[in-house]
Amino acid sequence: MLYLIGLGLGDAKDITVKGLDVVRGCSRVYLEAYTSVLTVGKEALEEFYGRSLILADREEVEQEADTILKGADVSDVAFLVVGDPFGATTHSDLILRATKLGIPYRVIHNASIMNAVGCCGLQLYKFGETVSIVFWTDTWRPESFFDKVKRNRHSGVHTLCLLGKSGSARSSYRGRKIYEPPRYMSVNQAAQQLLEIIQNHRERGEEPEVTEETLCVGLARVGAEDQQIAAGTLQQMRTVDLGGPLHSLIITGGSLHPLEMEMLSLFSIPESSSDSQSVNGR
Amino acid sequence: MLYLIGLGLGDAKDITVKGLDVVRGCSRVYLEAYTSVLTVGKEALEEFYGRSLILADREEVEQEADTILKGADVSDVAFLVVGDPFGATTHSDLILRATKLGIPYRVIHNASIMNAVGCCGLQLYKFGETVSIVFWTDTWRPESFFDKVKRNRHSGVHTLCLLGKSGSARSSYRGRKIYEPPRYMSVNQAAQQLLEIIQNHRERGEEPEVTEETLCVGLARVGAEDQQIAAGTLQQMRTVDLGGPLHSLIITGGSLHPLEMEMLSLFSIPESSSDSQSVNGR
Image (cartoon, rainbow over all chains, first blue to last red; front, side, top):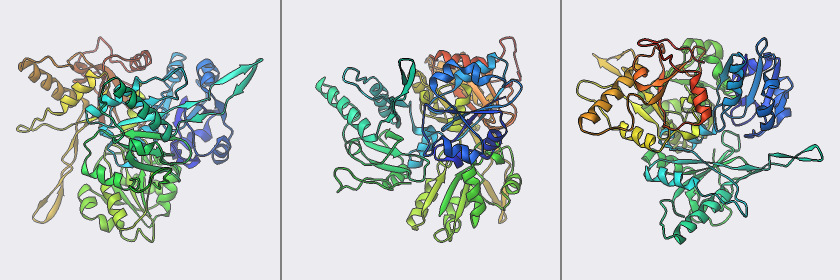
């Protein structure tokens, strides 16, 4: 059996009891190393689970699926995923490969950033399509995702923006694999790019549905002990200090339910603060 | 401290290790009794957790929040929620009440139907606004949610339909509280109502974006051992047999990614079958 097991978002103890039982009973356990991060590393997980884990990066999962699945028809193999196995990244490719090899699979779900962002008080059923904001380079500055944000806002629904990661790709130098340290986009950087896109729209004579004054929510390390949430304008998101990764940004849909407003007020950035505010949240 | 703890979707062992630790250490533990169901009852949870639980229905949470929160400033009180505390139903009211009383809170997230539906292979970031389909009565047959389905479909994004529950409200008879047994909407019933709405649109001379032939996915008991998934047309959803509650229905957004198509093919209803098909899923 192939088990796909979600680890949740915080630390080693965010695995479910069912998931932990399976991890301890499997012949091999892989840890997905490319999508997301917990607040703890592989070693902390190994210590808590009481067994060793095999790191699998994206390339390995895609190219060496058969190695991962080897023997899973006669013994149990687990594939651990930060968040939920069907959260921000799906693992359909591994499941399809297993199915073709006649290997049964089971999924043990957990919290994903896709549902845990509800902790800010915005209602999950009122979210529209999710977008990803990638790091711009000097020559590549994609804006197309902004159409989805505008469409969501026009429909009155919130947009969850998943923020990019770069540098995780490994390169080769004289046959040796080189891992670049990953770089995670902050809410500040995402807001900066959004503000530039809005400016570009204006220069083309368009007045976008999302402006500097649009109410947004910045979230950092959702599900972890030191989680932070800040509600304020997009302009405020450019400077709010939410600490280390992972960050996510929500662009609200406009008309909020009174309960949503009241919840966001728990996290609102003080009016008086200017640059580099520090915000406490849960 | 007030802890809001998600129980996930399957059985007692779907709680996280962190959640279980907290449950065992709290002075009082409430179990939310109104939104959703696990495959096991209160007694099974109590046995696994090794402690007693206090059932709290919607009315009690709304009217007796102060009783639930009593002493939470000096000891730990837990409020258990099937799925995630910020999933299909938010528990903002309890958090706001706690905050007003100066009681700190923490959320321990878990899988929600809002993210676990990704197990069918449709990509979560491509879902639009979620809708709820309620039981029609002879005199109350709301169709307004269908506008959201059409808008999602027009934008090419999927719609998760949460299916109604009725009869859970309690009534009073000579001062005694009477609980009606809850009734959960099946995928068949939801499809039947949708087909009638489509017919009504046609009678008004409109050709809706969603028709009998629109590709849908029916899901039952997501996250449980006997989970079932069926992919087929809306017409096929009218008769597919997915077993007991809880059911959810997804109306796809039209153009699917090849990986989405390939995943759905694992769950497709056989072409040859007509009424009352039985479908196996994971």
